Image (cartoon, rainbow over all chains, first blue to last red; front, side, top):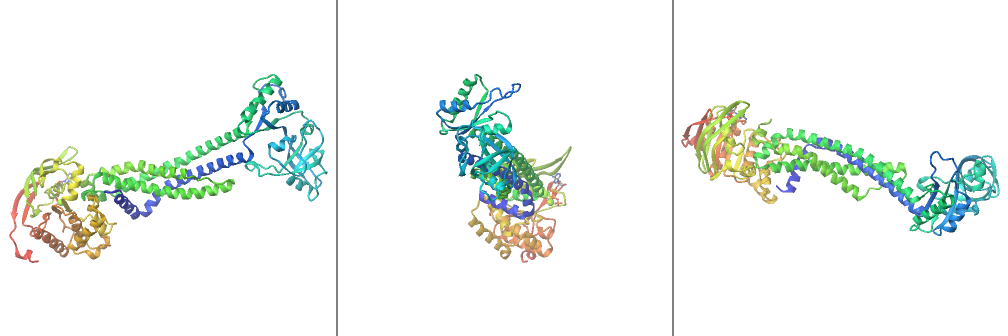
Length: 393
Length: 233
Ligand SMILES: Nc1ncnc2c1ncn2[C@@H]1O[C@H](COP(=O)(O)OP(=O)(O)OP(=O)(O)O)[C@@H](O)[C@H]1O
Ligand SMILES: [Mg+2]
């Protein structure tokens, strides 16, 4: 019996029991759909992550104090000199800015809003790709305590209304400052909004908070190739200047992203595994129904054997039935899964990624499930004795 | 064509063993029309099932066309069932959900016959049993007599050496029985070897030779007189 004939026999039998066939594949459909959705959304998320990284630049990094428990705070804090020295000694670093983030409330003539105050200096605009649309950004020289501020234009609009904010006063946590420029929100990294930001000179930020702290340094290497060298050299300079070891850490944005990517990958894997279990349950469902079907069709099997079917013909027929069922389930599952991932991705605001590989694996898996869970019932069918099978009512 | 020697079949159920067939020896020549008669439980079906390679004897030998059937493996037996034997059952044993055409095609599918030849052969045998116009119907849509004719067509389709029929008219009324027996008679005239189990004297009368079974033994053989009433029907 050829494969085509076997396929035809199997399709005939499945078609005869349309209702049962469709119920049988339901488990596989749901399983495949779930796996496809999870993987597509997960891979979509990772793709977005990587695309964002490309946009921001793979040569951005941060240096921070690796504070250890028990140490007095501020022991190894950065100084303004550190920054100047690093910039001088490490040619691989093109821009380096100190940063100090303070949550705050800003008040304008029209309204007040919560906002993120970032104490920094001129380089920060280069590192984080902030675009100035009016006035100017902070000047170099982080030591200045001048009470000036650069506002995001959206935030400015909210607290100033239609007035031109440049040259006007705002208060930040009740401390007055003069607006010197407006920035425009770039398409936020991973949807993180930069629209609620105010940039002020670092020393002024320290005045606002009352603490003489530089939280971290954010910098940009000349290019992606020498970012590793740039970070290592900067750390070395710091260690020499502060006469310590292992107190400073540098991490590139790319590394951070990779960690994030790894985490989303693991989450995808875990959810995918759970979805995979439903696929397993679907497979067991197929086996269950196939066993019922074999028992019910005992007489049919007897007739086929009497007409000259070999055991392997019977085996083949039932196995093909199981595989066709699972493959149909897989097909439907992929379609539903594709729909599901578009839906979920729309909620998560990133494009789903259904790769050809995923679909191929889904089909391969369906076939494997069909074979795995179809083998036992098909084997039972093939083992039947013709006379006993024919005697069955 | 068929030679069995000391054919014995013992059914074993638990500790109880039941000899359904005891040392039956008989030879059936090519072209013969043989009827098998006997009371219920006398082993007729057991005998026919062994001839049809649906069952294996406990002991004894069975030669079909000079090959010893008990030496064949499973696949070879399947091939014998497929190629050399056409079985007709009392309960027709058609697949109810396949149409008549597909039912008749089944033995050829297992034989690996190409589709074109299958179609041609199906037409031929359907024509032989006079059911050409029913090809697209399913078994439940036709009468019992017609179903049995389909079953005969299916038995014939691979041009077997012998037709084995176990009470083929057992479920039919007398009119349908006559129709079916007319086909057997015609087949016999064309030279087909037929072994047919029956309870009824009138049916057995179609055969040239009758084997009588009792308690698993072949107790008597009769050559039927050429009775003009039967043959002129
Ligand atoms: N699988 C089996 N296990 C045990 N005993 C069996 C089995 N099959 C048949 N028998 C017994 O063997 C004997 C012969 O059965 P068989 O079917 O050959 O009789 P038969 O002559 O065809 O009868 P009938 O005219 O009723 O069809 C019967 O007593 C039956 O009960
Ligand atoms: Mg019987």
